[in-house]
Image 1 (cartoon, one colour):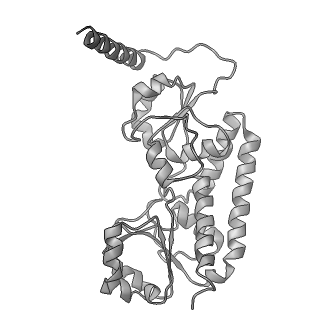
Image 2 (image 1 turned 120 degrees about the horizontal axis):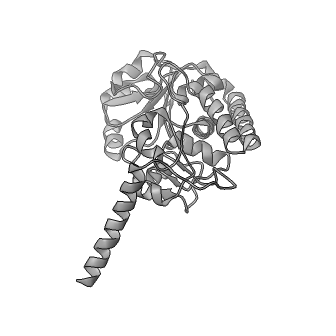
Image 3 (image 1 turned 135 degrees about the vertical axis):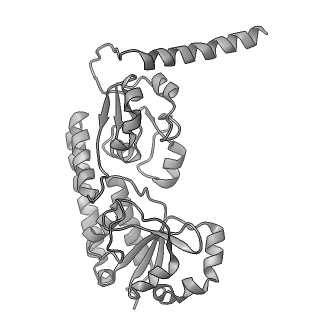
Length: 301
């Protein structure tokens, strides 16, 4: 009974502390390094912080981030704040951040977040605006704010070099347009348009996107497979692995096997990449696309 009472008291103490922190104005003692401890709730901004060497003390959905975004690597000491759509405020409070880095996607949570620490919001993805240039701008802004301007500038410069290297290596492939897709099942695909990060980088490398219409800076809703036959000369790039059951069904699918690119062997698959990432995702996409097409041999007929 005493153990139960003790544990219950501890739980109530944590809840009381959290409620008090979220219910009163934010007060913090001044520190010599005001942004030494950073928390982040947006994956694109998490990528950016890691890329410039400003590892946060806490971030959201780290298990999924390591599977989907993959890079940059997240140090093991970074606390996991749980779901992006429902961050764990208790864990955030215990992480004692000096600054919380967020984006307009989390404007709904800013009131609660700002009661724990000051919030800095940066926008990369907006309708009608390709995201590469904003991602570059945000990288430099974070570098300036966190005292890492040189690291940010170096990372931006390295990103341009990687994309230029991909452009040179893939010059022979750019004669064909490219579908950038993700397969969720054996009958439909999601497509990344020119206003997505993948589509933006694809054009910078020198390719034409076979899906010319905007996709609201991400991937368009599921589309029937037969739409891939509308551009018969295209190459198909599948981003992230296909579910095993869908992959088995595709092998025997008359629709899939009738698509000109499939018949001609112009299909390559890339490992997972964060579709709403920043410059690290742009670089990963350029590198994986280059490796996949070069591994396919000479430019397919």
